[in-house]
Length: 413
Image (tube, rainbow, N blue to C red; front, top):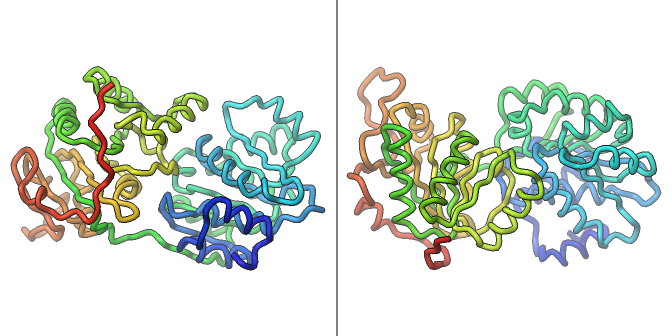
């Protein structure tokens, strides 16, 4: 931090920074040196400041054009990045203009403002940034020095690759490119390969997935109705500090939220179709512990850092198990204990192959695990499993917890 501009150092001190995180130590020097970067790092590791700090370090008062373009897949994530950027900018000795461009905002007003003055740092969703550069020609990014794609895997999942390619073609050919993601999907690699110049690879994801602070229970189900019953049983028997229930489909997020609400559970739903203002209010309420349960989709929850998540409940196991990694990574942080509870059916053999590959220690309840997709021989599973009947197993209940979450009284609406 000693070599930073004084205003950046002041801003970081005001934010309580004492030292850089692992990802910041790996990224900031390389970014300041102008390297292209491909960074794999999970939510909550400090990656946003890992690219914001170098961007702000390179800003100069006499440059009145767009210096950096930061793309994020959702309005919520873009807004969160903008908040971090403004916390740095408010300490600068000259006015640094931050522009936030996402759907759900008055486009005509944005165009009028851009005709008068351009921002120094552009933050937004790829679709809106493309619209403002290609359709209205209001946003001038042709002199940008840095291009950042945050949550790249989720950005691709949202169908933004074409917009990203347009934005990439608009910035200068020598612009620095930094890509951040919890995983780097194969479908994104061809674009990155032709777009980046000898990128430095920084992989800080814990691929072992053996977090000793987490316990993993897998409960056998035979149908959606069986899953609903299991979920009700789980909610009746745990008292989480904060629990996130993940479902693969938005329709299930809404249905499960209504079902639990009708049962008197203190629950809220979080999915991608929420209006921005309502979404922001819900997130603020969650952080203030107004709710004990959050039913969410993967897309709606990515990149949102919630403190104190004690339980993760997988109503569905995701088809792409990279999302399983994202989900369970929200609990068992900072030395706190956490618990994951996953409902499975005989159709989830691929998920168990992933669990075996990564040697995740699990407890199975309510029935046998699915048969492997291909079995050349009857070898035993390589994962550490212990079967038990329905309900909490004695072995699981005796497992030592390294450090417990703060307790809170079980609250109903």
